[in-house]
Length: 335
Image 1 (cartoon, one colour):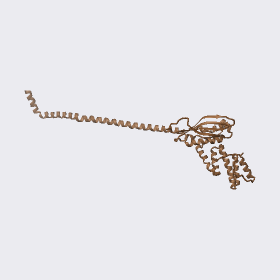
Image 2 (image 1 turned 90 degrees about the horizontal axis):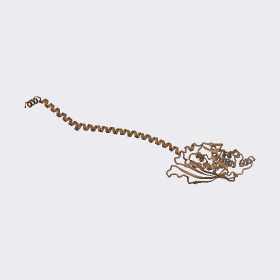
Image 3 (image 1 turned 90 degrees about the vertical axis):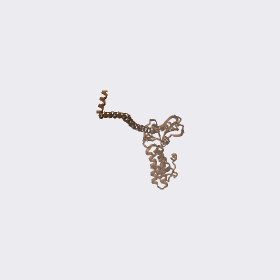
Image 4 (image 1 turned 30 degrees about the vertical axis):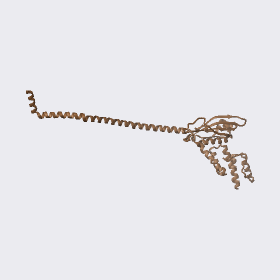
């Protein structure tokens, strides 16, 4: 009992200290409770949210980096695809170039003194998909003439070495005097064709001087750098002045053509005829001196031209010309 009384007395004497200790104890307990129920959960939530934000930032950065890499890769693929497209389209002909190659067959035939007896479109040997960006024009070509002239024609047809041109099934059947040449010509055209490779290739023509030997040996070639399509347009422009008997204009066009293909026998014949026709026209217009100059120019082209020789002799002897302007056996038709 004395111990309890002592404790009570001690508490009474130290009441303020006891109350302070009790207050501190209660405060610590309350603070611990508040910390565990309010502060710590929110702190944990904040840390978790911060971790999520950091993860999202990293993900966003990775996504931006991946997008940049993807854009660079796509641009590289587009550049590579464009390069491949340019290389592919450069191997095809345009429709105008294909038409020019067909026209060149007749020019080479005239230069080689052979006759094209057939040029027929035929089905392509290889199928083309409906969605393909190119088409194949296939033709069966047949011509007749002496063997060496037919070989000369093949030597002139240098377009077979160009992209988009394929020559197959070449067959030469020899006969007495006249032989037959059959071949299949395929032209690969595309609306996307740039024509760069074709325009870069030279336009070749083999001189008819010594044509037989040239056909066999492949020597003596005269090269022009004018694209076939441009030359064809120039030839087509000859029709109107020729039919209108506008001989100065026809002569001007023919001389331009012969600057590009100086060994074209057909065009040489037409220029000779144009000068002869001009001479008759000038004579009819009472310009005999100009007519004589035109006849002399015609003889420079063909010294053995009997029509020009006869007309020049008549003018020099003061005799009138036959104003019919006939070329006799020359047989020069309109272009």
